[in-house]
Image 1 (cartoon, rainbow, N blue to C red):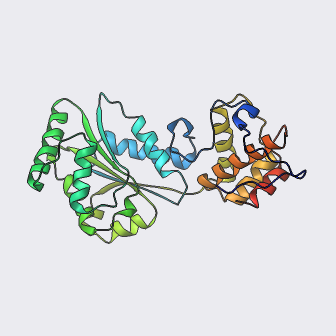
Image 2: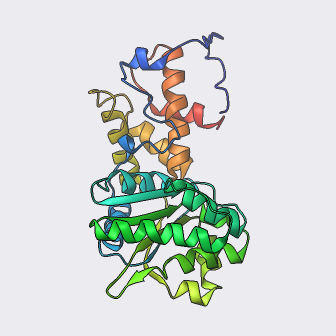
Image 3: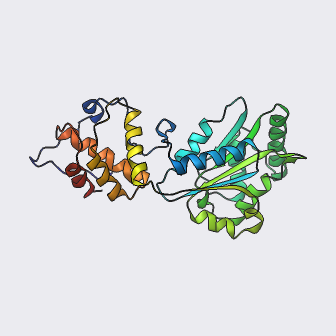
Length: 279
């Protein structure tokens, strides 16, 4: 993170804990996919509903794409948290930049299954888990985050083939692919995979109104104060971040730190503008 410059009087206390200064229960703008800070907005709600629908109805393969920093991973974590462990068996592959064989091993590992030497053994082990889940009324879900990082086309083929585990009336496994916009183009170039995608959703930057709601909601998750960021400050943050969630987080975090070091009572547009020059 870029260090914030000294205030006008030249002072800077790097030990300031701004959560204490602002009376916050936690850091509200950390760039980690904490479901506590999921903020509903129109496009995120729409994506969440479609993906939930695809999982609940066992559609086989689902796709969520989004611009860098626009909340794909957070939405994915929110989706997972919302799935009852009594009804869903969920595996998450967070780093799929693996060979086809390694990717299959990682899938088994994330389902808590023992690794087998042969590919046939791996597939039999996985199929056994999926069949057992189905018999107990449990749906199996595989979430692959950062799927644009998959280099080998054969790895995509391995994921597609996992949806061949089926009963007569349903898929035994739902695969959710999450990645940056180029993932759509990668998939479009693989017709046999592209045709398997039953539900597609995309996330873009927040609007000005959504940015206001986003900042308000994340602050509201850790404090009862509603006046820390002025309307004018939020407008500056939206302008400079262009509505990208990750940039909003960085800007707000540094504003809170700067405000604490300067002993201000609110984050106004002048402070937000000044902080934004160094992000």
